[in-house]
Image (cartoon, rainbow, N blue to C red):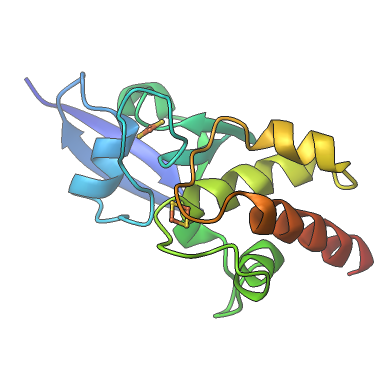
Length: 157
Ligand code: FES
Ligand code: FES
């Protein structure tokens, strides 16, 4: 049986009907067409589905949509402002941290949650922050460089 769910995503309120067992990831992608958040393992192992919920990076494949009610949800679609890429997105582009791009939304959103809490991280802290995220393309070096560069840029703005 479906139930009405109200979600606040990227500053906008959405009302959807969904079965209580639907994950936040399923509702984002299949019902709200917010397909920037990716689905891969579906089991909390890859980080592709990461969104920010009340300031914390979470795997949206492991969170039920109804659990996200009343919380502020940020997806990759909400990161740029006024047509301008967020500094983390810019840094991923300029450092070659996006190749096939499948992991990128989850990595970038995780980086945003991380840098909001730790604006001047060491390389070891960055490595730890993205340790739950799989990338089959880049070897991670460019991603770590991009997050470091974004931290520096955001610190000087
Ligand atoms: S799809 Fe959610 S962690 Fe892999
Ligand atoms: S860029 Fe392809 S999986 Fe990370």
